[in-house]
Length: 578
Image (cartoon, rainbow, N blue to C red; front, side, top):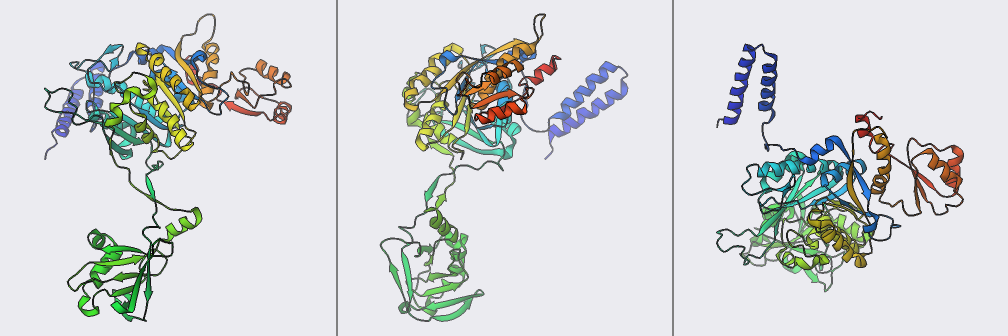
């Protein structure tokens, strides 16, 4: 089959080459070269009309910063690890997280706007309508900017999960294939979100009941899923014991030594309770015959010997099995016309070792990709005590997603936090398994959602989980220096928030001290006798302690943590202050 697109591309490139040979105008040559690059650039993948957001333009002349909003923070700030709520445009928050959490986030879960055209997606402060000719390209531009940063925030063993419905599922899948790599696609989960009997509109011919969750690893070689498992069953399966009552007849089948015991030359004992030293019965039939080495051996050499050895004969085959016994028992058919038999095996050596050393062995199962959450979503209104129905996800679903990562001290990021469900799920999962996971959630304050929904929910559940959370809001400063001060003077005032975010601490409590200049360092040393509660001192690399000062701090059990010299070094280089 001729690839029309490929032929057309070749045709256009040849035409441009001929035009280039015929022109001497420099401006025209530049245009032709740009056209050549554009045509040759994309061979396969997602192509859309890129749109520049107002927030992108703002980043060209303003530098985002965080400001601590301590009056709406929650809990005891002396906690070992603090959670964070980042209020503002999530592109600003992601920009700043790249300074503190690059390659540090374990799990990202997002539930972005689905772009249904029903006032659920704003682009540059205007809702995107159903009849907007650039509806999909605006959404893709919006998501592309954020998903690229999200990938850089993930650890090598981390993953991202994205909820979506059919409006943008296909474009999102192709976009994620480009950003994260098709080989890193772990799964697409199909989530039933409403009952089949619940009609949205009886005039519609079709009734959508599914949504989707796309899963991508940062690197499939680094990520190992926390798979479901059952405890390996010894008590009910390993209950058989075989007693040989004669020497048996020695033969050779398929290069293996076999002892044949007639029906009256052996006996089977079935115990009431299993034991590690007993045997398990497996029927040699169906897929066992085609997909199992023991089943294949029985089918090839033993199943047709009823006329020779009689019914219910026992075969002891040497050199088969992974149970350390060195042999495997097979039992022939019980009737002359029968073909099915049984074989008896001990506990595999690997599982025996686990049982003996750890007290048990886990039998892992694959993660399936369909789940019915219609009941939970139908009752979603009451979760967290906030009336936010549209799009709120049940914490049961989010706990399941978070628990796919094996780490119980994972950092979880959600930069479309809205209802605060992800934070709630993290806290509830920690309560279930005594984990120490922490969350960073981001939301804007459109229609006062941050205060009426996100913060309200977190305050509602505080007593149940007793957590701590700092609340930052995004702000920005002008990139242009003015006559009165340098940008560096303004930015130094916002290093505190970035250091708190990176180290998950609060400098307002007495255990930690942040020093940003030599005067603050001298004050610390001079007042060390009075600051008995300090355990750590945080400083930029340009502040140096003398050997005597270091010894003084160490004597008092105070450790020194060096933070980046400038969290804003890139911005300061751009304006010529570095």
